[in-house]
Length: 54
Image 1 (cartoon, helix red, strand yellow):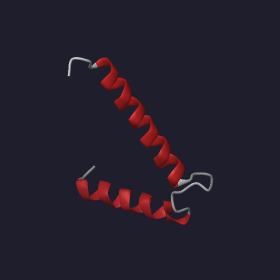
Image 2 (image 1 turned 135 degrees about the vertical axis):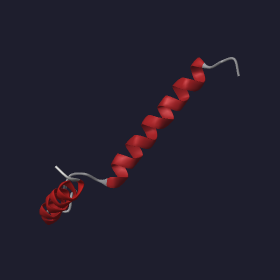
Image 3 (image 1 turned 90 degrees about the horizontal axis):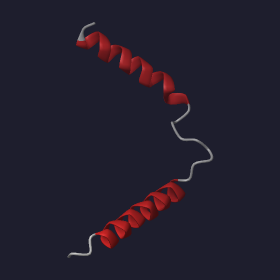
């Protein structure tokens, strides 16, 4: 399969999924972002607790 044929198939696949918008109704960007931020802050806190030599 050539590169142009693969690109054409990907464009077709991407254009078919345009009806839904890609977002789920139950997902809230602020909740997801806040949860990710809290998880990263927890990992940072754990890392600093184990690195006591600094």
